[in-house]
Image 1 (cartoon, rainbow, N blue to C red):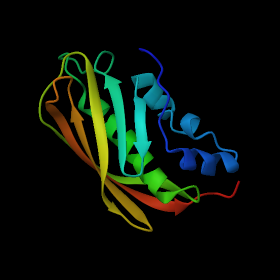
Image 2: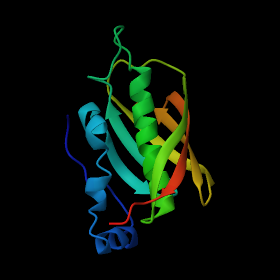
Image 3: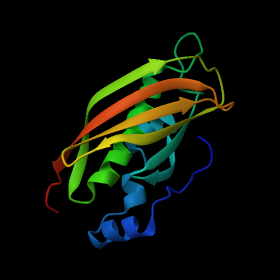
Length: 153
């Protein structure tokens, strides 16, 4: 589904994970569901995560972008931000996702931008704005993740 893009991470973050034997861009490739839906993470840091997803292949019976597809994009990019905030010693697990759908989209690419609302020791909350190719808001979402200790490698 389109060209492959490399996920952008700050070099010090890549180095931190590489020292643990973790290929960070591969880890944050959006997983099997994200891959199946065409999610691409194009920018990633604890302060801002940007991801895209095609509308084609992710529609409901009326030909509009499926609300669940917007939720997948929102949870994917919000979780990446929370994981990067938690660092290599934590894993982020979504515990609450809220999505408000504002308008329908029938074609093109939607873009989600996740920014932090709260970043604590044990939880992180991100606001996600999903827009169409004209910059019109399609969905507003909020994701809260609990930050758990990562299993020892």
